[in-house]
Length: 73
Image 1 (tube, rainbow, N blue to C red):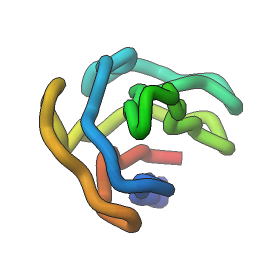
Image 2: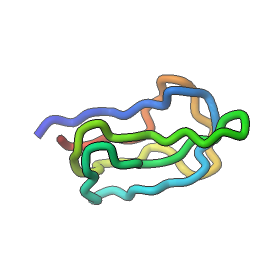
Image 3: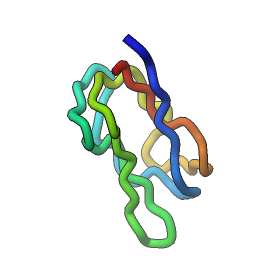
């Protein structure tokens, strides 16, 4: 299996973690939600796979391009 890193598209704070390591995510599934300027932006797995790691915690600030999760696809 190949691993892919999912990155944040924006600067913001991790509002809510949806997925957990070991969980199988369908294509288009939401892994977590980032809040920026009172907007909620989901981090979506374009391809399905198994969550290897969520590298951020709720409330943590993230930068654009920061890896927030890793999937086995």
